[in-house]
Length: 321
Ligand code: BTN
Image 1 (cartoon, rainbow, N blue to C red):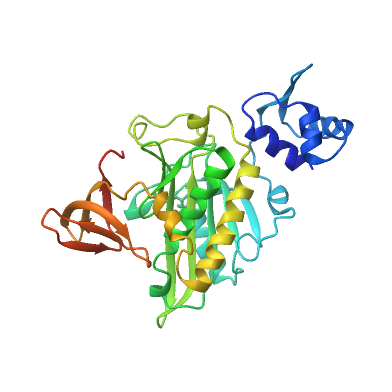
Image 2 (cartoon, protein in one colour):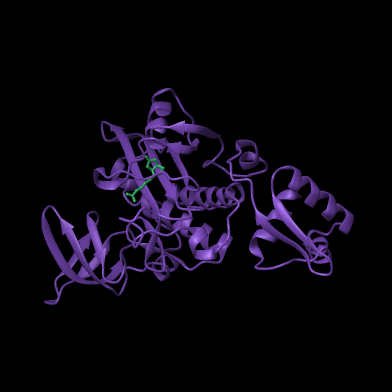
């Protein structure tokens, strides 16, 4: 029940009365009060004011594997979860686990990464307050079948952010999540295959959750849930929501090989309708992003009416970082 109390307080902008919480949870006000005290003992800072109720000020900000696993009710993603204090890169750790027989759906999260990796050989700064994790998947499929799995993962994270924080998170094709015009999430998918059959996939996700500020060189391009909402997010509660959506979206993707709800994906995609510039194999295509195909390719139409189906590459979107 403590998780539900935290969820109610996290979602509220101001004070919530004990009466309101007891009504939502169908328990007595004494039970609410006992849970609030027990949460305080765990390190949550909860203000209480007579005639107003309770307000969550601060959450203990360490990931807790036990809290993450409890009654999670997932089919594949997150059936095993491990939280490490420090690792080079959770993607690299997942690769090591994969060669040691690691289970399909295993999640490795870390409080700190000493060598966090981004796309295109870049590094991913792993400042405190972020959420860094990778998922090990073992679909028995050829790699070409899951070319758009990163899109599906991004879609799931976008839905989780929207649901948990109420923020207007959007997808920048193919795999960034932006809030306003700044990046809040990056995804790096790596895979290994033998004779055209996947051995494993590692989907690495970095989410700027409680990051308070960014270094000068990226501060105009990066944001965090804290910067956008003005309050700290309970990382365990939020991570559970993210895992829940990842399990739902990725399980259905691995059966149909499509994002089932593509129309909603398109509605949440900031790239569509914008002027874009795509760099592929050293050449640049400029045009308008007009559509996303069922298999996840971005359709770009140039000023002469030529259509290009883009499945990878760097896409710069006008107005977004
Ligand atoms: C990008 O936008 O360039 C992708 C960033 C991916 C970062 C995450 S953090 C967890 C996982 N481990 C890594 O080393 N990288 C991914």
